[in-house]
Length: 549
Image (cartoon, rainbow, N blue to C red):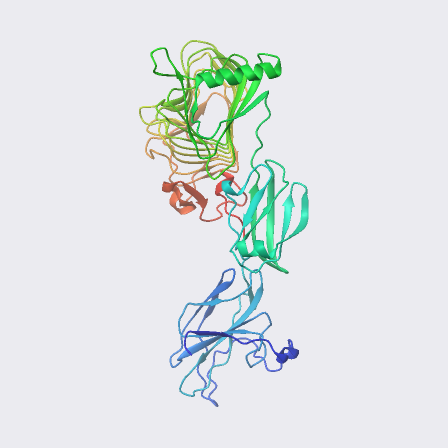
């Protein structure tokens, strides 16, 4: 009978209900000498799971095995209840299985013998004043991936064949609406909800009758942004050339009836695109956008983002209302800088949204030269940047000359992982609307003698809020921030013990006692999911915050 698990099925004895005619108050610590009973186990603890619980107990000399009884009833009767689950084992700890999620259970156990010695009295699980434990919510649903969504639908999935009956869905036009699950959907373990709004978050709770079996949240992809002219790259076409840009600009100008026009260039998911023009000698040249043209490089929804790999830096010469990169992966195709601007330009918005940006040897954005450059807004939102700015490079965001005027820099909901030099360097001219950094996670950035933000001598206000700072690249000589403006980090930030600023410490950003390895799941491999809830509210890049029980 050892290590054997069985369930006593319900029968007519259920009519006995909750009657407790022979219950033992408290736990039995004594030997019943009249029956020469076994001692009860010496200790009993329960670690709860969703459909299981781990029972740890102290063994008793003379006991051959132990009987564990689990029930949603209170277990005050002396005999085993017909509605209980009963397990027999001599292992500790022992896993009790077959439970329901989010359910209260009572548990007791006793020592048993194969030699005829009477079993001990029941030893009841008690936690403080509570005689029951509650299982965690069951989770049989899968996370929603990029392949599971488009701009008007989301596919929710779970363990195929599991017993489920319906969703309760919220978000957009849904308000606690019930959606039935068909037999074929149950067998496949998936249901696609259609007719949804773009860039809208929907949450579902999966039920089997009244029992909750899981939950998931997904956000629909963005619709192709509005523009004077929209163009989708045909399958098989992988080069974004200067000639293509000119053709798109001409079509947009005709549609808008003006040189001030816009193009959305939609890219196929998972496809790698080269981005360059061609010089007279046949070598690669920088892409230039015609004066007055605004452009969005937009990645269509799919299992993987489209990849843009420019061989030459993008040239932002002339005037543009916006240059946007949205839902794309951008990597160094030989250019070293994504933008290495020396020509005069006026840009109202240069933005990166839902992007991966990585492996640029020198910099993401560098301004240089002596020509006037004006950027009203540079923005990063919901991005991941990694392997940027080597020791021979420049800061990841480098405003490198006094005629480069940036009014405002906003970085939010993003992660930056592994880079040398400074993160931001803007010591040649002030940003009149300041730098705002919020809900970001930083790890392994800032090399010897470099700064997180270096605005030396400039009246640039820097505001840092709801951010998580992991270890610095160089723990001996990394530096914090400097500016003649205010540096405000007073609102809800977290700094790991191995985030070391040897000088220019950021006031109110004091280190904790926890290292990056203690707070992140696998930081060296780019997984910054929290191991623990180290703050009382969401901070850092939201993608890494685990869901509550």
